[in-house]
Image (spheres, rainbow, N blue to C red):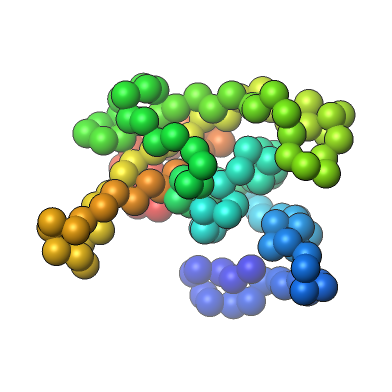
Length: 149
């Protein structure tokens, strides 16, 4: 884990070749302080990971996982192509996680979805990114502060 402000190495973990990145990263969540922002790839856009970030009172910014639907017709409108969506905890937890810790996670999370077109491609090849910015308490931050992240 690196600090984006200074580039300093905050922590790292190693494991066997076949161990998942998510399992390795779970040991680094203790480094997150309240109010910090975790910038991660779409692999970390799972309910389990984001609920852990919320539990530490931190925020996360990552692309929406490919298996998640990015329908902007739902949720509360915050601006053009900008929605706040209530995410219900899935009924079944991930493989390897027992029911008790899964049910201990919050029943809902609020996330903010903002698709952005990639500008480095010609317009006819532009595709939409599907980032997800998850905020612990969306009313806590103004739209301007969120956009500065």
